[in-house]
Image (cartoon, rainbow, N blue to C red):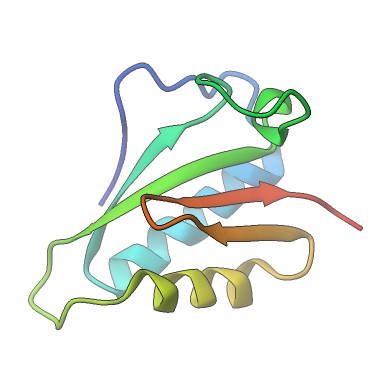
Length: 103
């Protein structure tokens, strides 16, 4: 299940990130983990961060299902495969950072 942490701002979210969020939600559901959007355009990020343009989100996941717990690296790898080359995915241990960055 996807949820949004209180205070997270998504008002400038790009269409690409909205679609990526739906895909990430499905990946988390497939792995029986709960997914929380922990940062959008809010929070402190580098000055040139894609968060401020609506092209990046941070996700945290927690194990919730009956299946064996899944390593966050496995989820990150699946996200990379599903989203493709126009997205950067960084597993930062406490969360997964996803940004739309077409080349």
